Amino acid sequence: MDLLSKRINGMVESSTLAMAAKAREMKQKGFDVISLSLGEPDFNTPIHIQEGAKQAIDDGKYFSYAPVNGYLDLRKAISEKFKTENNLNYSPDQIVVSNGAKQALANLFLALLDPGDEVIIYTPYWVSYSALVELAEGECTFIKGDIKDDFKADAAQLREAISNKTKAVIFSSPCNPTGSVFTKDDFKAMAEVLSVYPEIIVIADEIYELINFVGAHVSFGSLPGMQERTVTVNGFAKGFAMTGWRVGYIGAPLWLAKAASKIQGQLTSANCSIAQRAAFTALTSSKEASKVMANAYYQRRQVVYELLKKIPGVEVNMPQGAFYFFPNVSSYFGKQGIHDATDFCIYLLEEANVSLVSGEGFGEPDCVRLSYAASEENLKMAVARISKALEKLI
Ligand code: PMP
Ligand code: GLU
Image 1 (cartoon, rainbow, N blue to C red):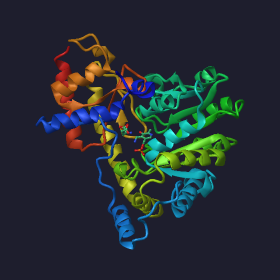
Image 2: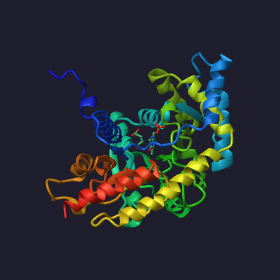
Image 3: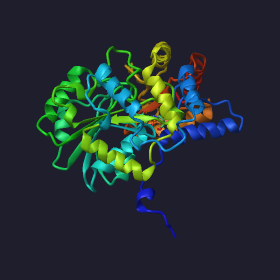
């Protein structure tokens, strides 16, 4: 007898986390696995942020439940950051701090969706978008970008996807898994389409804001008339190398911020008090460490691009931000029992001891995701191993 709910039985496991677990398991068995599957900085949290957390413990003032939506001074600092860095005006009561951007997104979908409501998802998309929409009993409508267009779906596709059930649109820029960055012109075209539908909420996931190689970051909500209907999602995991601390946040219209906070109040309460103090330190100190890390990703991107380009049958574009490549490997399908990107990843894990993530969970089954948040030495070795393993298939 299956006692589990339809909700959980219908849910797919996070493929990024599943692949990372598989790589970890193989390492524990003694295999020399290079894991390029998890989207996680290979840097340690900068020392001054660690010190901020230590100081908070020593202060002895932060051991109780924090306000559900986050400490006021942290929300003030986020509000100020939005103003000065993103040209966005969210007051502190429009900010909700959560257990990572992942919970921020879960709160939003649970707050917005009734069964059957649709969310338009720019595809390829980060794996949890579709799972969280479905968990909230919404329906996903995917609009897909081609590698030739840097994987960016255009405004005409957006217009076509809108129905009278559309509740929200979501994208990440810089994008996980493609590294693509929407330009101001891309956003203008999207805004023009959306201006006819003021009731559609835009969820702009900007968690890779600080890892952008093409210039100034543009926030969708900063476009004229867009902020009132835009939720800006961000967090500390990527730009500050703080994945494990679990601090993400939104700036949202007040009614939606209140709803997200209400859900969080029943699900988890506020996130960890000490992690919030570390986040406060990160936001109110120099961002030099983030720049140093972004610079390292920039160097590695070039190295990996040159190497991937040389592998026959691998089609790769140049990502503009984040720390991922998303090459099309479909030319290998049909060879030696490899039917799809998932088989391809399993082949590389077993044959080359390199772990990547299948594009299937990102909505693009012809591609695989490679995270280059790893040392240059490991990246070079990994691509050499991949290349050698693929030679055997030709
Ligand atoms: N959005 C995107 C695009 C991501 O890649 C991730 C992965 N971490 C998240 C949100 C969730 O981030 P967090 O670790 O803060 O939950
Ligand atoms: N977002 C990261 C990734 O895409 C972390 C894993 C996860 O939460 O999915 O790999």
